[in-house]
Length: 304
Ligand code: 13P
Ligand code: SF4
Image: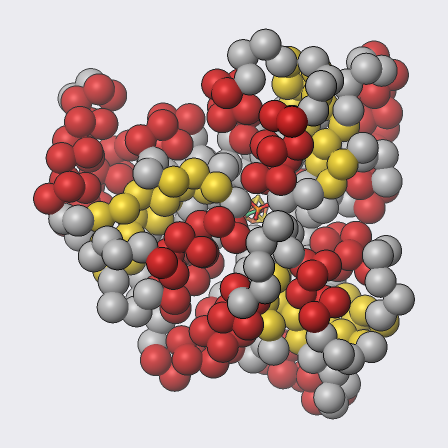
């Protein structure tokens, strides 16, 4: 089957099943190309909560499909590659979090959406990279537990005087970007703003002209008058940036910025998922209800 015929079979099946295809900004180009919505974690969660489709085909990683199942339990959520996980999400366990909460009674837990449903269920509120500061500011407490991303946590901590208890998790993909590489690129392209994701190491974020979520980066580059940008996040974002800004140049800060999990899902996988209506991600009710509380609390905060 050619790529074109796979794409047209996917489109037909999406209609037949009343399905919506959501894709994260890091997905392969050809998967983003057929998506109904491409966006960051916050935009995709919001869409999963409001769509009237019967089926959500989630092209992303496991925690994202779980969030869709938490927010829309009556819908069938398909994750074409069940093995697409997130190593950062796996760095925090329920047992570990419960243990830390016991040591810090009364301290609320802010959990990055890059976490399992079971960890969300033990959390007070979730956040994404797009709203983390607003989420932290929405809490009356002066102290918070922030899990699992220590890099995002320390970035947010810079803008508030609250005390952060940071979980020791991180994204292995973003962590591969080194400050010396960014310094060299900045010297070579002095007119190019460096835009990066707050999952990068703080030494890298310190060099950024702008740090934000993947959709935040897309918006920043579209609005900016600069002609050239150094991009410090996963390579998948380049496809939409280049497509929609043909007169601008985008330089990926490092060839190491490729998340193997985000690259697993192929068009063939999407087609197979729609044909077989598998694999389904479904969060059990005893976890879904408390996890939904934490996600709903986050979604009640308006996006800019
Ligand atoms: P955002 O698209 O929300 O910025 O998330 C980045 C990420 O690492 C998702 O896995
Ligand atoms: Fe997880 Fe990082 Fe991959 Fe996102 S880019 S899925 S945070 S490993």
